[in-house]
Structure formats: structure tokens, C-alpha cells
Length: 157
Length: 427
Image (cartoon, rainbow over all chains, first blue to last red; front, side, top):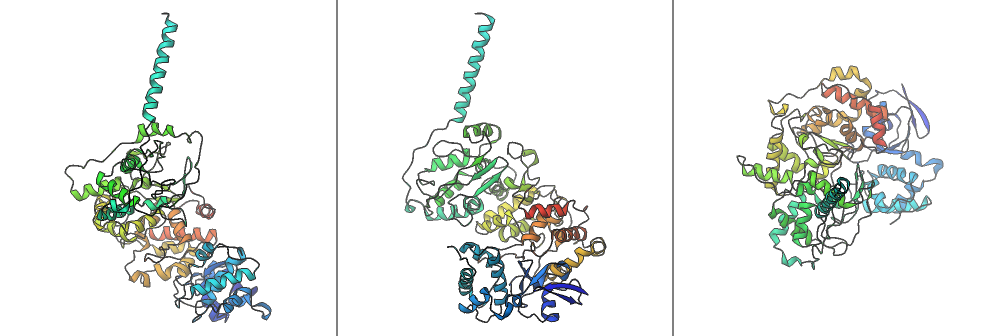
């Protein structure tokens, strides 16, 4: 058995050490926010935070985690209130099919927690690894700008 | 005249002669400013050829700041002597080269002298550009003078004392500048000679691939022996190439043109930008370069019958079980034999030079930073794993790869090197 810390809670998991984190989140812990997209670290649909940094959970084996803290989309919706980033995505209607959105939100969350006043160039460079096949990138960027303001900062031109 | 007075007079004369010689060597006349010619004054085919040649030399690589306008300069270039900023080579009259005549441009390329007569620093590789043909320089001039002018002044350089005093460079030129153009070598094909002219000239390959002496000049006796560039190790391109598979002209061509050789590896680090630029260069020119570069490596061990891909999985699994586990979970999905990526004809890891050289830096850079083709262009891609793993885990993966895909001794100090790379340190 392996102990994983996910969204602040310890979980006992029975899985091989080379199992990707994404499989454990979805299949063992029923945390279905992160999605399986390509399985190759090329699309970002599986993005979660490990110690505050965005990673592709499809490529993170359990062996890599140790005591590091995992956070998923579900971890943002504490006490029933939508967190600033998901709320901003909703306000901007940033989703088309929505498959990439959990990953987009987590990647944006990582940026804004570290720096809620990024420049537009920093924002775009940071979000670049995550893809949206519907092409809603412009709305996604607008949502992150709105979230930056909601978190007491704002994206600088 | 007493002996003492004679000595004084003689030494004064020698000193004056010396100073006169230095002055004559260092002083270069300013060339008259011109009114920038209009684009119509240049032949369109010449401009197009110049554009392809500018891409062969990757002018924009150094002369474009991160996020800045192309060719407008301002990119900081770290050197052992301090930081030099690339200059604006758009045809802006005040801040660029708009007032430069063709003669002034050719003098800068061949001798490292700016239009106003000041010496340029050899970070600008005029010691290579001097080898270019007149025809090529004329085309590059036509291309640069027909770009849109951008007003941008390069930030001041911060060089160690006394290198801010530019006339000193005259001494460097005396010692290390061998003025071109390069004469063809008889007995070699026209294609080989064309390739040599480009590789030793505009493309300035040995600028990164040759070690330098204490004065920052390439050691000619160790040409293409491999060298450090921006924290990456540029591997040898001569008989010391550690490649497993032969670098044939076809393979060099594919690598230079697409950033990927199916028999070697993907271009990474500073070389990725070079291949992206060469993708826009002239096809025949890149092929000629490939012919010449392949000839440099003709005596390398890999030039002999190809060895099979090495895979010592059992040994590596025993030596680095943690690395094996991490490789299985993170890397095998693309790099294991039979993985979807490998079905597309990608080279096995054992064929890449990065795992074979003495320094682990290139391997660690690629694992930690991944490979990302430029926006809107195809190219080999790999996610960055720097945030996925701890320093120790990254070191363990590198040690596992080295043990599994090479027979070379283990890399020392891997954890320390990972830490240095995280802090942005360069050897």
C-alpha cells in the first residue's frame, strides 16, 4: 500500500509504483476532474498540481510522488463555494466541449498562486503546454485574466 | 653621444615606432554614411537568396531579443569576458545599419569593423564570416537592407576591465583573424567546397563546436572537438564523434533540415534554433553543408559498419531499480521499443550522442526542459519533466539511461549537476 496526499487528505492506494498518477486519481480515488487525453504529455488534459507545480499526471508515476502534495480540480471547490479560477472560467464561458478545462484551470491556478500579476507574455508562455481542440484559447486567456483580478492582482499588458 | 643617451634615444624610437604600428593597426577610417537604398534598388532574386543565407547563418538567432522584433538586436550574450548585447541589424539609420554602404557591411563581415571605424567584438563571428564569398555577402546585404527598419538601441555591454576599450581587439585580430574569403580546396568536389565555405563561413558551426583558448579564440588544432555553449555540450563533429550510427551526408542533411535524424536524435538546446533556421535555408546549400560535415566525421568510429542498438535493460534494472521504475512510468510510453512514437521511426535512446558524452548536461537539460517546436511549426516534442521529479529522481533516471543504453562509465555528481541546472548554472 502507498500513501498519497491528495487535496490535503491522505489516501491508502494499492497500486504498482510505476502506475501513472492519473489512473489512481480517476480509478481508485474517483477524482474525475483530470482527464486522459493523449497519455503522452502532449495535451495537458490531465494537468494537476504537485507541490504547487503543474504536471501531466498521465506521465507521473506513483514512485515519483513520495510525500509531495497533489491537488486536483476537486481540491479548489472547498466549502461549496467555487474558487476564483473555476468561477472566472464559468463567467467567461471558456468551455466548448470542456474536456481540456480541468487541466487549463489547474495550470492557471499554479501561475496565479505564484504570481497574480503576470504579464500577458508570461501568461501565454505559461499556458502554452495545454491544448484546446475546440479552439477556445482566447476565452480561456480571458478567464485567466479575470481570475487574476479576482485574486487581487491582474494581468499586465 | 654617450652610451646612456644613445640607449634612451633608441628605446624612444622603438616605442614611437611601436605606438605608430599599434595606431596603424587599430585605426580604421569611418566609411561615409549613405541614404538607405530603397528596396527597388535591389534585385528580388538577390534579396531572396540573401534571406536564405541569413537563415543559413541564423543571424536572427543572436540578433533578436527574446520577445523582440526580428534582427533588431538587444539579446544579451554571456561570454567569459562579460555580457555583450547583439546590435540592431535592421536598416534603421540611427540605431541599425541603414546608413551602411555595401563596402561598410562587407568590411564588418570580413574584418569586424563597424561603419564608424570602431572594432566589433568577436562575439560577432566575423572570424567566420570573413570566409564567405563576395556573392553571398552581397546577397545578405540586400536582404538586411530591405527589412523594415526598427528603432532599437542595444543595451550597454558589461565587460571586464579593460575590454571595454575596443582598440584592444586589433591585437586579437592580429593573432586570430585569418582574413578570407576562403579559397576552394583543389581535388574536392564543388559541392564539398560549397559546404566548406558555408560551414566555415556564414553558418559558423565551429563557433559552438570547437573549444576556445583563454582569449576566446577557437583552438584551431582542436577544431570541432566539442565545446560548451550556454550550459549545453556541443558534441565533437570530427573523428572524435561518439555517435553510434554513421553520420552520412543524408543523415546530417535530415538533421540540419528537420531537427531530427532517425539514426541519431532530435536537435535540442541551442542547436534546435539552428535547425529551425536551416529549415528555411536553401536546399542545395544545406545539402552541401551536410556533405562537408559528414566528411569531417569520416574517420569517426561510427563511420564503420553500424553497430546494433545497445539495450542492457537487465543490468540497468539491477543497478538503478528506482530509475527503472520512473522510466517505466514516465518515459517508456514514448521511448520503449514498440511505443507509438517508436513506430514512427524515431531513434532509440542508445543512438543519441547525449548519453554517450562525458557530461550529463545535455541529457538532463532535455529531461528537465523537454523539447518544444516553435509555435505553428512541426518538430520533435517532449514534455518537460523538471517539476515532476526531485533532484535525486532526475539523477536516478539519467544514471539508469546511461547504464541501460551505453557501456560508458557512470556519470559522477549527477544530483549536484541537477541542482546547478535548476539554478540556471552553466559550466
